[in-house]
Length: 446
Image (cartoon, rainbow, N blue to C red; front, side):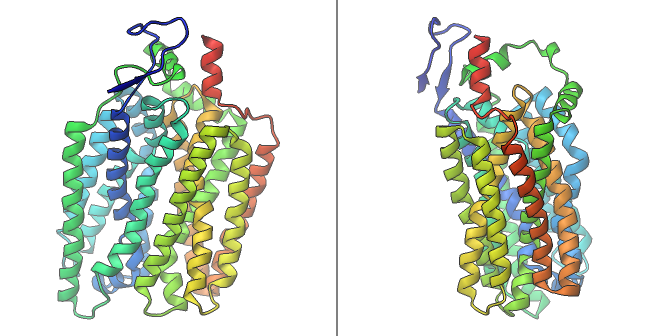
């Protein structure tokens, strides 16, 4: 069950043979599944912030930290995990990520009493460690398993899982955990949600053990064949980081990606609080609005991935998506308090289509700017920027909302998206290679 694509002058079975195997789809969908489970655990507290705050008798800010710990944990662990990805490969990282995700889910089941908030914090920290083994994988899986005309689509599918997990995290918790005053009944409903999550996480961990493979027998593209044929001693992890940090265009992308994704993290974490402020008692609809944002973004991500595979127009596409993210946030900001929930659904969906759709685009653009550097390293640096800005924006917007209202909080984010748009525009006008640099590199080398 393979599809062959052999370069000119090569014969089947030769070292330069390029093949695509159907297992690549199993790999990317399995990764997406346990990424989904981990992302669900990130937002499951924030989507019903007020309910968890009442159950554990802590402030809403304390519940916000259950989301922000995902961002904080990522920063110090990125480089060790990225080094492991380069040294040990995809399978080791997949096993570690799915195992930690499973362990964290079971630890949370031990926090079913109001005084056991530290236990749920411990479980969330373990899950946040799993995230470090997940976020840098999409572009690497796409590059290792998929052909040159599929990498952007494959990366979008890999990111899909994470986004779908956030969507489910907005949708299910308000349904599974109603806003009850009786803490005994509330504990029962929370335990159902935690047990379901732990069961799914365990099943996915078992599947990773038996199904996930390191790499296909043959490279899927000429560019990958060249990377695979390079001697291990020719690669230095620290030199790779140094080269990336000396790449001006990549530095600009790090900043603009961090600003956009940091705004998304802040909006997601604080969405329940913002919607409940304007529409009291609408916890379920707050979750559905979050679902709308993410599902629209998934559609945007898929369309963007297919578009990039066909056109390779990275600069123009990135700029258009970024500008529309800013426009969407401005419209969302000034329609939030009109008193009509359906308007919020529409504007939130439009915002999500572009803002969330930008995430895989940033990953793939980074690979184009930095090839032949490791995809895990470039993706990791993007994610560090996103986590740092996510923490700052979540804390900053939360404080502004408390003191000045939701509109001021959203305008705070708009100002940073405007800055990111200016940086992206500058980058689009610079001398960044628009064609698929991986394909060009391979052709020139061959």
